[in-house]
Length: 125
Image (tube, rainbow, N blue to C red):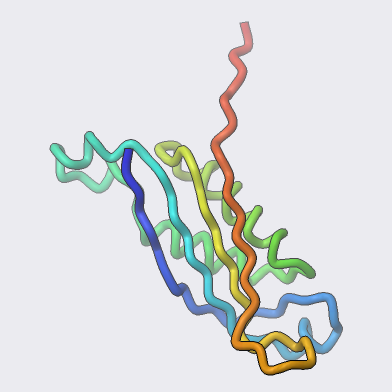
């Protein structure tokens, strides 16, 4: 088993519960960590045998451009797409940070972290 991290993916997006947040938008940072069996890739040296981090970056950017009220909802969508599109991935850890959140104080960022495991598929016999 191994880990692949894609860190500090910067995206400008329109998320939040307030109308102003969704109208104006703000900067976000997304970190993605995935667990996968990387043994085959260590010997084949082939991209097809690992997790393509370009694909992860693409998923994050697409999902971040779909407005949501909650950061948790975005993180769940990112995890679901990773499991759907990258079958080698066994676990995900997605952190979504809102930079300078409008919470009436001097706060650098607010971050949610969501950890997910791939669900075992039930065979249909």
